[in-house]
Structures are given as structure tokens and as C-alpha cells.
Length: 568
Image 1 (cartoon, helix red, strand yellow):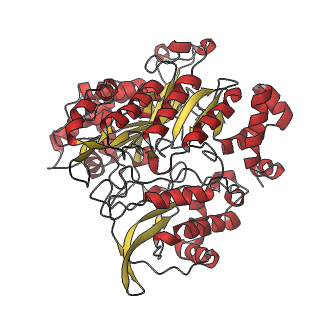
Image 2 (spheres, helix red, strand yellow):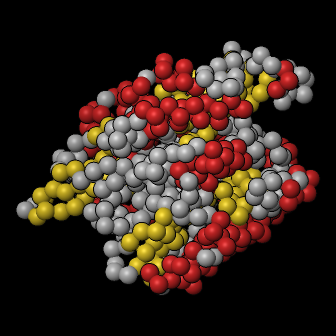
């Protein structure tokens, strides 16, 4: 077994939740926690939804699970208020000036419809949990080697493009796995998505388990249910999920997901941590053999596949949209890189209560944006006049609309470069500087601070993964020793999900950060001149090819190709 598996054998990871309460009561520092429980405790703390805070000692990042991205206004208000009260940068790390865009108390919406908060002290965690419990929220298994937050379409139950509302199934699956000791120690993280939406808003192609709408005649009756793809994922060794020959009635979804988890638990690799994800097991066995293994462990006899109802992919719900009910709208707000002030998120929740019906909700999306639902048409204008709505506008420029960023080096142990501030500034600058075609409403620009793909760069029009770069010009260095080292990134083009799904190609490696915007400007100048009618940016990049894309980027008055990955 690898070291992490040994730590999990020493103590069941879910037991750490009671330990946290003791650490809080005693006010233990990080050094005291490690002295008491060993360095494996930092791994086990993930089952409580807590990560140690990068280079800033004695503070945690805390992740809140939001199944399907669905929050009641009361829950959303609590999330914002908890951020205001507890996720506050201390003075020794800059206080209100800690972040010059978002200040000292903010939260992050993630690509998995979670909420992340920073600057959390262990002594405050029990109070946060108690506040959360009152409104039905949890951080349990927000991280760790178990079932992560279950994804879904943020417009579930609202939009005319869905076959049925899968939110009840999402909730049932999430409830089954959360806190379930039997399935809380898998070989690695276990990611599921469940949707009744024709447009696959839940990204089934890049999850371990991706359940999408289907129809089949069962016992003489035509019913709706799910088809299932398995073994998708990003990071190192990305893989698009492959289709199982199975039809899953909604009532059997929990048992089906349990059987997949059981298969992964028994057969998954627990030796080499780098290949422990379920996609490697599916690749090793083949999808057919993996399906047989699942069927042997499933207590219900599932039919073979029926009629697939997926028609494409929609990763964006920004803007004002009609709901299925006459006279109601939902509004998608654009949160660049997913970061928003705690006070602003609480204001959005209060606005949902003021302007929406009793069914109003806040929905988190996989593109790090959020929706407010059930707004009578006559109230939309007043909602859009709220201060938060003017800032997180529902009609942004295409780069702002598609900008996604991970946590980055600001807080993450693995982050090589800063991401959130950079993505925000770049998106705003590109919308000012580039005149995009009128029919191009979004350019999906995703930045990960390392190779871990938390920002999903491989499925973006333009994707980045951070690294430090050796450059020729010492005047550009950010290194105090005077080495020729700057923050930079690998630069990828042409990714997408949907019927033409494809991972992007890493067209140029080790590009210094200051050269990226000039390179993008050159690419869009060529794209606007050469695009065919209706051609999306990622389609154009595939058509013209990587060699030519490289030459276009090198026209920029910047050191696009002058860097080498630090350490090579």
C-alpha cells in the first residue's frame, strides 16, 4: 500500500471529525495537531472537508458540499454570512489588503458546484458545523478518497431542455454516500454526475460516473431513466468516459452507484497513488469487463441500454432565461473565476427571497457561476438593479463569461502560479482589447495553477496549466535571487465537451505569463479574419492545426517561445 493507504488503515478517515472537535476545544496549533496525530492527519482531515492552507500555517480551506449545486435562499445566506464571520484574512497576512480585488472575506464557487472558504481556524469549525447543520449543509467528505459532491444541471426542474428533474436522485445518492463508512475509504476520490438534462450540463464525459437521460420500454411501459458513462477524468492521463450498456431506472440509481463504488473499492489500485483513479481501472479492464464486474455486485438486474436522449453540451447558464412555468425567469450571474464576497453572496440570497417566489433558489454551476431562480418576469428589472447584480452582470463579455480559475498558489499546496487575480484581470483586459465576432458569446479560458486540472483546462477553448519558467531576460524575473525565472504556463487550444468532445492540444509549453495576452490577441486577429460562418474558436484552432497556431502566437511582440520549464 502507498503511504496514504497506510494512514487510512491507522484510523478510519471519518473518525477525524470527532478529533476536529477536540482540536477546536483545546485550541491546538498545526504543530500540536501533528505532534498528537502524526502527519497522516493532514490527509484524514480532508474527510472533514478541510485542507491545510498552503503556505499560510494554522489556517484551513473548508469545502462545503452542495449536491447538484442546489441551495435554498436560507442556505445561501448562511454560506455568505459564515464567510463574512469566519473566512477573514488575519492582519498578519494582510487583513483587508490580503487580496486587492476581493479583500479579506470571500468564498469560491468551484467547478464541482462546491463552496470553498479560506482562512478558517480550527477553533471555529464546530461553530460553523453547528450553523450549517441548522440549514442542512455539510462539509463531510467534501474532500478525501470517497464520493465527492454529486454534480447535476444547475437548471434542474427549470428548463425546457430537460427530460426530467434528476435533483431528487442526486440528493438520494449524495445522502447515501455522505458519512457512509463502508464507502468512505476508496482507492481515490470518486466523482459522480447525474442529470436529466438533454444538454449534459453535468459533464458526464469527464466524471468517474456520468448518468444522463434515456428512455426504454420496461415491462411493457415506456419509462425515463439513465444511461451511464464511466471512467472519465482530467489531470495527468485524461480520459473521456465510455458508455456502459445499461439502463438505470431512477429508483435503482442509488444501488447502481453503490455497486460501482463497490467495484472500485475491491478492484482499484491502492499501491501507486498516481494511477489509483477509477478511470485507470476502467481502462485496464475495458468497459465491458468493468460493466460485468458492476452487474455482479449490483442487487438489481438492470436492463441493457435504451434510447439515449442527450443532444449536446451546455456548460453555461449566464443571462436571463425563461422557466417552464409561465411568467417565471431564472437569471445566471457571471462570477469571474468563481470568487465572490461573502457579503455579496448573502445579498444575492436575500434578493432571491425578496424578488422570487417561495420556490426561489440559488444554483451553483460547473463554470463557477450561479443562478437565482423563480423570479416573476415583472421583478427581473429590480433584481438586476441590485448592487451585486451590476457587479456580477448577466450579460458579460465573452472572455469574462468563460473565465475559470482554480485556487492557485495563493492558498493551494500544489499551486505553482497565482490564478484567481490573474484570471479576473486577464478576462477584463481581453474583453476590452479584443473585438470578437457578434455571434461568439463565450470564450472558455480555464487556468489551473499546476497540472492537477482543478480548473478543467483540457476542455477549454484556451487552457493553461501553471509552471515556473526560465527565460532569457533577467530583468523580467520575479525571483529574489536574480535567477531568470518567472511565472508561466503551458498554453493549450481546442478543447470541448459534447458531440465533438476532444481534449485540447498543448500547443506551446512554458510561455512566460506576460506573453500570454499578446499571443491571444494574435490568435483572435487570425481567427476573426479566417473563421467560417458560425465557426467557434475551438473549431477554428482544430482546423488550422498546431504548427500554424504556434507561428501565429509567435507574431506577438512578446517572448512567447523564449521560455523553458524550470527544472527541465
